[in-house]
Image (cartoon, rainbow, N blue to C red; front, side):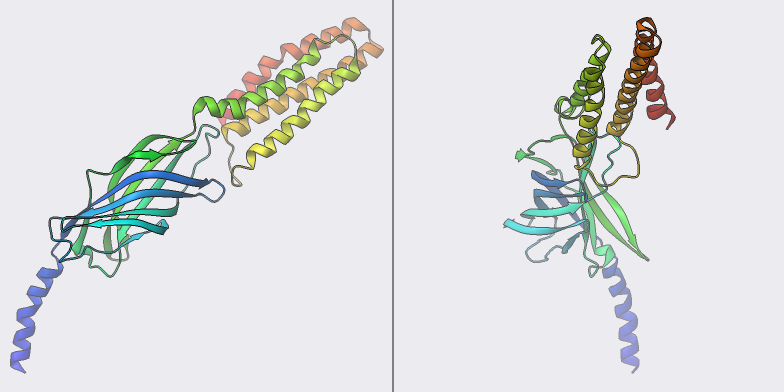
Length: 297
């Protein structure tokens, strides 16, 4: 019995010292391709090389298994291993929070978060960023442009346990000119058609059509563009521009109605005066709504 007690006291410090040993591993992510991005549910597919390296022999002492905490691996396509480094090419589906306040010029951060599995003692696995992290030379990102990449190691706490969390973040954005031509330019075309009503001579049937039909076109265009996004509890740049466009077309419709009434009961001079009035207040409407929507709210 005394021998067992003595053995416990001898082995306990050794066990604690072993448990407190920290093994450092270098984690690397090299992006190869970005697949489908589903803005509605905030998911995206990423094809990348994952690597883990250490000064220790990784064949004799395998590295910790890791968990991709913000997604799952769909496929491991190839693998390479030697005593110093293990590399795997993986295809995964991940999710992260997306902010669409600047839509259609939004920047979307795509993240990959990695932690050691809980069965590994916290002190045994410490992550650092491998210098190979970045973008593979053969990388392709159809329809998007990678404007920034960032790699860091954070501390993640679960109860009293602390884990190293490796975070790879790639920020992507659509081409600004392309986004403008596809999303903003059609609004300007529709508004331009609506403003033709101000220069047409007395023919209120045609003028009314030129005022109302652009409104219908604008509504359908708005619905089709918003179909790309999830339901949002805030306004985007696109929404604010659409509000300005709606008010301008409403001003045009009111102008047509007032002109027709004035021409019938007050004469052409009064109708022409109303035409000029509604045309001149257009820049005031644009300025006032821009200040309210883009600066006050």
